[in-house]
Image: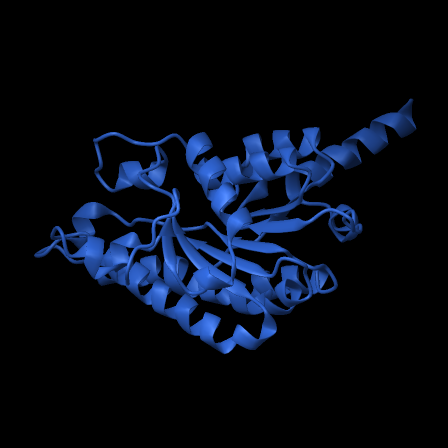
Length: 266
């Protein structure tokens, strides 16, 4: 009885803080694998749920797994879901996670983590440049850091796809339609360029790198933007994006598309 309680306590601890022995256990080799950043809530959580239901291996990352209650519940239901601690702004955490998974092919690397920033702090007359740096650290540098760190994992996979969410706000097509929102627009413009250049540099490795705008999704990020109009649910957006990812081909490399497949010039 005591042994059973002791084992149960260890399992609970693994779920709460991320057990090294669990995380280094080999993922089922016959299943495709997706790594998702910012997987603890909103779209990231929904991507984790839907990919798990599609029988993919899911490496779900977030800054603090201890407080990711819904993600913990998902992992408890699905043996193919691994929860990992990774802050995309941290070289140390990103490199440590890559080291643990250095032999793991990753079919889809999904750069989902992102922040909008405080709207008032990116309005003319009230700029907060510390806020600007933080938005860039997450949205632009973070996606490049993760993509670069796990590049070899993606190269070794069957599907070889790197997907970054968002980008429309960083284009002349959309971003120039209205004023304000400086930081998110600037970070997404730089993000598009980073992913576009990465696609050029890896064209001979068979990688497909695409940016996908998930739409105006009913998430905290969209609420932070001040948007009060009609939104798409996280469930519907994730399903549509997953469908687009599955259908990607070489002709889509380096492009920005919407969740329903329309190309956005950038």
